[in-house]
Length: 283
Length: 283
Image (cartoon, rainbow over all chains, first blue to last red):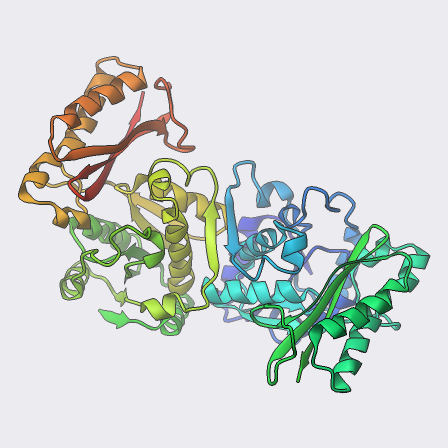
């Protein structure tokens, strides 16, 4: 596994690989790799000739009162894990090279970034789209893999790729869960033992919604109210949002719609740790 | 000369050319080609193996009260002129494919897009950066050529390329002028005979500024006031702005600065036709 930190060097290597007709896959991450990331890498690996994993804790996607400084980092473990899955190139740029002091450019996506995560985190998605566009131009991939865990991010990136004509195939990998159902996340490490136990309510509430729908429920506010009830039994939980929306436009649905892909998503704080989860359903 | 309108087809051809190690140059235009455009193409041609000229009157860079609908178009003449310079591929996409109805993504550049043209035309530059990024991702060039005529556009595009890590060399071609000094522009065609005569005041005022500076003037408001006086002698002229600014940051300068590249630029309406011009000076 080659470790690259220079942008120019990464571009040069990608050019060379492309000249050799190698198919490049990129998996952009913020590091602190877990089974979720590894599943993206595995999908990328089997769909490409060269797997580029990137590690960069991207400052522009954190709000001023968010956890950029405390976001967990473990570069040695990351190198080992990335290598174990067959990462060919690990790209770890510096903050200074990614965001020089005269940086002024952002990619803004209307509508779909103003709801759900974007409503709670107003500058989050412009940070995500901007860094992903940069990483695309630096690693020059044929395919890129993102996780369904960040459902809205996946939708936003697909919109950007389509609108800006990035010639890159986007694959979305399913959520990987702990044995009790909690979605894998680097932020799970923040949880106290008690919060960790209660955090399973995220998954349980989604399973409850699924069951209500399978049993014939169509009314979204009723489904959401049942999810709220379940989560409210956990003393450390504070709901940020619960949403049932069109999985493409992210418009909220009052009732389920036949034949549509719908996204049930939620964000809940357990103590000071904000976690998200989601499922896609069709009726 | 190949004429392509499909985005996918253009990307496929560019991929193929790149696999053959061909150096691709792109010259993005809005058509109605004149000597100014042809000079960009000539520079692109001698710096590449394959010259791609694009023609697209980009709706997103026109304001709601601007001249999108009346902007001059002559596709047959454009084909002839583009071919005469050695354009290998003429890319003429449709509006529907460039901006499908669910289009939501814009590239925004802070600070340097809020002054000069950006102040008079608030959504202009996000339209420019967005379409240029799209054309970059579609034509996959090694180099791209823009004109100094649109001085702020050249600065904004260079900022975008740097910030988003587009691996593309940007060349800026000097302004081409009519024999009386008027900068070539597709919009010159709007001018009445009388306005056309008076429009030479743009160039004359820049030459006056240059002379004042060569004669030892340092005070920018004094220089600007002399330029205003000259332009005000033309009955059809109405000044939008005259500016002397740092040619990188576009910050207005009260006095000239030693060793700096400075941009003297102006926008003036002659009747209903808004024209721009500029020179770069160093002291």
